[in-house]
Amino acid sequence: MDKIYYLASCDTCRKIIKSLPKNHNLSFHDIRENPITAAELEKMHGLAGSYEALFSKKAQLYKSMGLKNQSLTEDDYKKYLLEHYTFLSRPVFIIGDKIYIGNTQQNMLQVMKAFENV
Image 1: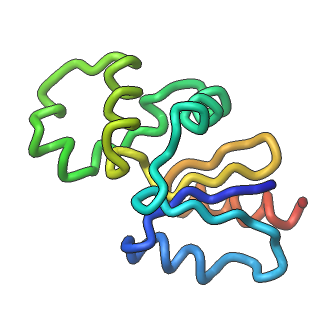
Image 2: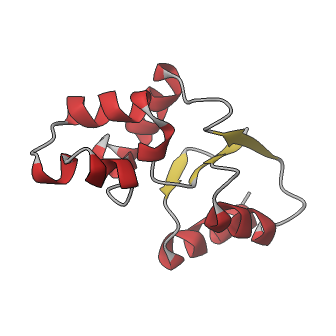
């Protein structure tokens, strides 16, 4: 089943969800209410190719913890992603066997095309 990992309190996520096709069978996963598991993160990693690709460098915690001044490894990215939901770049869509990470306009165009092809 296709899935979206999102944050219900995020205005951008809510706006994106409102714009999605209504006829699509999508499973919704609020990452604050139901944190991602190690197995889910591994699946995302397998599709994305790295933990860094899933990691949000815009997160306030990233700045407040001084992580932007450190050289983080893939293991570090994995640890932080499992530690706190805010580090996941969102929304994350898994549609078929592809992953779409983040809310850039280009990414959202690809998500909409993927919905058309399902």
